[in-house]
Structures are given as C-alpha cells and as structure tokens.
Length: 167
Image (cartoon, rainbow, N blue to C red):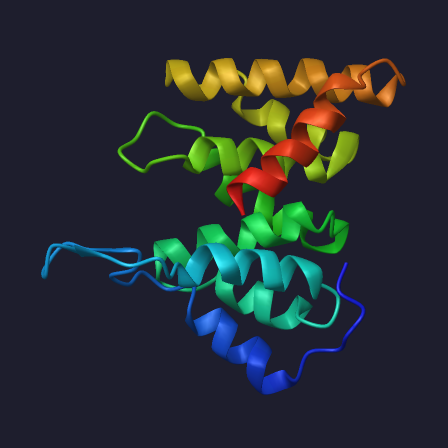
C-alpha cells in the first residue's frame, strides 16, 4: 500500500480517468499510446481505497460501464469488504463471455480479494446460463472454500501475480 496520502483532487481526477476513453488504443486515429488511464487508476485507487471509498461507490453507480467495472475491481484488489456488496455483482457480470479483453481475469482476482465472505453473493450465479461465467464461478467457489479451510496457497500466490501483471 502507498504510505502517502492522496489529495482529494487527485482521487477525483483518477476516478474520472476510469471512464471509457481512447486510451491505450485510439480506434478513431488508429494509434496506440503507452498511457492507460484506467489500469493506472485502478492500481492507484486500490492503494487509496479507504480514503476514496465514497468515490469508488460513486464510480460503481456511474452510467459509464468502464468506470463501474474499474471501481469495482479497485475495491476487490484492495480487499475493501465495505464495498463488496456493491462491487461483487458488477464483477460477476464481467465473468460472462463477452468481447471485453481480460475483464474476466480482473474480475476473478478482484472477487477473490474479498475473500470467503463473497461466497454468499457469488453462489447466486452458480446456475448461470453463460458457460464461461458458470465455470469461473465454480472455480472461484472451490478456491475460496479451500482458502477458507486454509488449504489453498496457490490461488493466493496466483492472485498476487495477477494483481502485479494486470494492473
């Protein structure tokens, strides 16, 4: 976690940067940029989730799908249980088979970050008609149950790897 406090203005600008934009790939101009507002913003807000809790809640109720997802992911990466009931359903929807690259990986890691308490929410989707979502949920439930029993060390290591490689 970052030890430095973030200014309110910086937290707000970071939240705004999580809205859908043309970064890193600009479809209109057909150019790629090394800047990714959302990915960097997720990492930053996850590191400052406690002080940005109200902004993350605001982002999760946004009309912008990207902002909702990234704020939910930041809450999960931060293991911020106070935001779990808002974030989990958003993340679970991103386990579906869709055309959004890597969102399922982010969603799995973020959901795992909430720990076994998220099982009560996740289990509601166990009978999903979407094969990818259902398979991901079954895997997540198995891992969280093993983790709760103290037997799952591999997912903890994998989740740390995913956090470092995804954001």
